[in-house]
Length: 257
Image 1 (cartoon, rainbow, N blue to C red):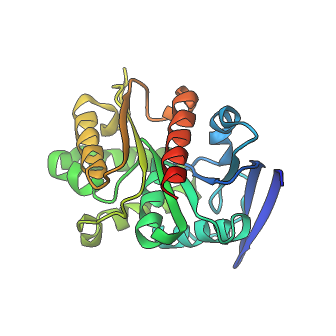
Image 2: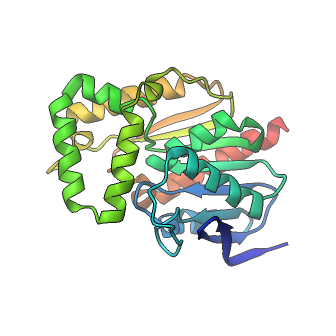
Image 3: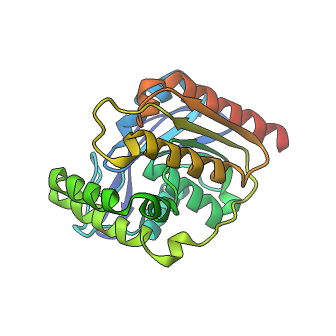
């Protein structure tokens, strides 16, 4: 059956607006980066075509999704992701695609619910341990970046950012995490910004970012880790590469089943 159009997934106190299109044996669920909505994936989904069942949504308070006014923890975002999967891909394993903070959510969901996921595509993902790593190397710059970001974020996103930073600064975030051995495609952006706004856009920041990604990829035995000379929004700058990575993970996971 073909799928197309918008669907609302009800949560307590708000709803999530979900876009889906295409058909196929594998459902591909997209998690956007911090502050981005479902439309961040439009070009990637267009490259995948109608033979892929693509599911993209905006987290609470973003895009067309509602909010109860409270910032959400990582665990609450994972619960919302599970609700989207239950509503649109019930009793099916999915390929999870995540960019930046969405990549962190994808890896955490797979770690906690390995039976629901058959592959991961991580697009310049954030990691649970990155704040600890960056603060060890450049503590003052990280704290200054926090203030710079908070000065430009709208109030509801600033509240989300403060809560996220609190979680990533915790001892629990620094704990070693073992991942289920799923097929994975990891895409790392390497371009240093001409005028860096935050540490991650500088040469030293990129070196730390690459180290985080290498450590993440070392936890998997199947898949690929590719580097691209793009900025952080790799999925917008090179949607073809992301679509190809999704197809590669789909092929590996289907061959294993």
